[in-house]
Amino acid sequence: MAGIEEVRKILRDLGIEEELLRDDAQLRTHLALDSVDLTQIQVELADRFATRVDLWTEHDYTVRQLADIVGERLPGAGAHREYRDRGWWRPEFLDDLAVSTRVHAGHRVALVGADRTFTRTELEAAVSGCAARLAHTGVRPGETVIVQLPNQVQIVILVLALIRLGARPALVLPALREHELESVLTALTPTVLAVPARHQRFDHLRLAEKLRERHPSVRTLLVSGITGSAGGRVSIDELIEAGPPAPEDVVRHPSDTALFLLSSGTTGAPKPIARTHEALGHVIRTSAAVSGLTPHSVFLAVLPVTHAFAFSGPGILGTLAGGGKVVLAAPEDAAVAMALIERERVTHCALTPALARQWLTASAALGSHDLSSLQVLQIGGARLDESTATRLAEAFGCRIQQVYGMSEGQLNFTRLEDPPEVAFTTQGRPSSPGDETLVVDGEGRRVTDGEIGELLVRGPGVITEYHGSVAAASFTPDGFYRTGDLVRRHESGNFVVAGRVKDVINRGGEKIPADELEALVLAHPGVRAAAAVAMPHRVLGEAVCLYVVGSDDAVPSLREMRTHLEDGGLARFKLPERLIEVPELPLTAVGKTDKARLRDDIRARLHTEG
Image (cartoon, rainbow, N blue to C red; front, side, top):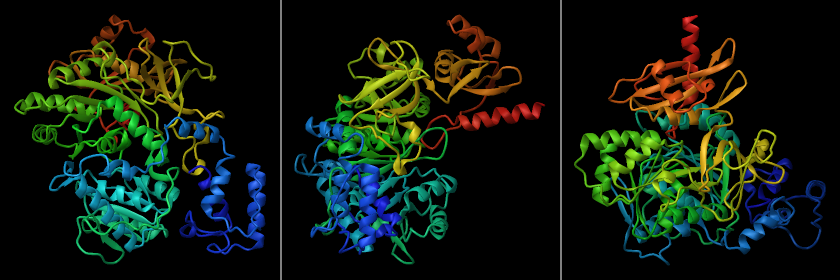
């Protein structure tokens, strides 16, 4: 909620332990603040927020009440009132939005896993029972829990139960390891880690024990794949059974932080993103609407559900909120996914372009599954080229919906009614009617429509700061989030993504957006996947190195590719100066091309070559 982190920081600076900073904790009665402490708080509030509060009255303020006062003085408070007045922010909680049986029929199947199926009534009972057991193990409202689980029913139930309890799950990709997790734990000081015992041959439990030794805030490990509870370990599999209702004395507010997502950029450590019930609820509702989700929809979650695209964009939460069914699967096996589409009559699925190309290969090889139920393939995480979009539509006989967005809250979708020439070549427009967008040059000036610039966004679903106020330069003084994405506005009103501000190859002062070049390369019949990265050049500073995955046809030579690009109208300075054929492109944990590894590879090659 607005102001809560500021108040908690003031109290932490006074030496109050994090575990005591519950929203309903009273300053004098529960936190035992003395006269010196109260005076210091008053000075801080007056100095930082121009807010004068008399803490010497008979009224003993709670942490929440103080935060409400501070929140009214923070930048954006007026916008928040507008969001509520216009119904964009609603007084509802994410767990109720997802599993409540008040609106949708309880007898219908809501969640399907590898070995368990839950109706909506059973799912709500499991969430409630899990919340009660979590409280019994000592998990308290306001605490942060790192959740690093694969696509299984346990993660859906656990996350919703933590939210119902008032705790704050932080969704972490299973592929992250010690280096990334260290920064996340340092930023969030969690009290609990939720991990699988093992996943894809990796010992997550061993790493969690190692992290617990180094981070004193962590007192409990929730583990799937074990039985019994001992030594600070609790079996998740035993937590998710139906049981008594969650504690009723939990104090929650729709403006509270419901969960944390992690930024998924290509540079730097992942940054925690606090998402409130109000703001994320708006994102879920609006994105579900433009995705065509209904009570009859069936969403197949194959991307890691700890990523926002699969979890809430609209993903699992959007499907459940609309009364539909969620089917969980792993991304590794396209054949299994297609069997599930046939068996469960899947209507919607979200993929990255890399995973979509794998599906194309698998569908050509299999060809026997009935995929006629599939209505919408959503492609996001990276720009989808026109040729792949065309092939997907032909192979699966469904609508291709491009999704361009970020965990920070802004989501753009091509519309289901967009004609192919728009849906296949653009990356969509805002799903929220309240989103404001600017496309600006390097000096922050608006560019004309059709010109490339950086996208700035603000609105009811967009964050105004990162947790802990890190990376403050990512936000403008008037509250716009700097996406770091280079886009141009198409005549349809949709955006076309041209690349990243930091994914631009600077060839002797000429800027070459990598995505723009890659889209043209992928139009060549001999190319199945491609990535353009900067390679060092002794004269120009940087030049274009092109990594190519060949199709069934012969892979084009560098000379042939340059001719193809130049014939396509590409400026000569954007032509690649090296082409490297690879069997596949390396991917990050969320299915994006790992360009950091490719840049390391070309530097190593050049060093070896002298």
